[in-house]
Length: 331
Image (cartoon, one colour):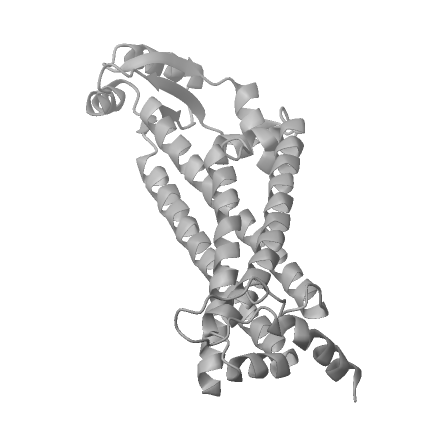
């Protein structure tokens, strides 16, 4: 007799103690018969492997959730910035004095309805904006770098963009108003695509987790086939057998999901601290201007917590359905 059969024979009497046997109507079950005996071993190689798989899937799904939260936050920040700010660009040309043009643009902008503040970027500030792409220490005098005039818009009054465009065309023909709307529309479209991609990846990870649970449940039933068949044929209810597997896989799923979710939260904290240490550098400033500060919102942390329980529930439900389907095939 093999070692596997010996182990099965040793566990079978204890398992049978928990079986709810068919009995005459009205006859109460004894306290001994109501005690549950384990069908699935509390620890096994396949169980540990499934725990690792669930932890990895939960970790990756949580990172996807965090990326979606960051993207949504960045899209909201872009939209708020466009509502609050716009830019006038003065293109350099032969015989054109950019300082005089900038002064003219400032005067016209201050007289425009809906503009609360006007600020012209200096050459040094323009060089700092270009530093991440062109590098530091460049002589910008030989380059056709436009002058930027930033307009802060009022929250109380509507911005008269058409009026400012007409004034610029008459008095500062080298200046153009850019309300960033086309750029914003492209960024928002990209953000939405990233969000839908993240949702798709999240769904695929949950499907992969469910398939892993199906294979693990079938493997557990195959390794305990003798016990399952004996229980099935002596009258154990399918709900009892399925409940044994469900409880086992629920604990596995919850442990794996908590490990993966905890690792993702630790990654969020580490990434946030790393980003905060780089504040002040030109590259980080440009990334903050484009994508916003690296800050995971409370909704992402709550999402990770909910995801952990969803994964645990999915693991238990998938295991139970797999057991029911296998038991029906035995009939």
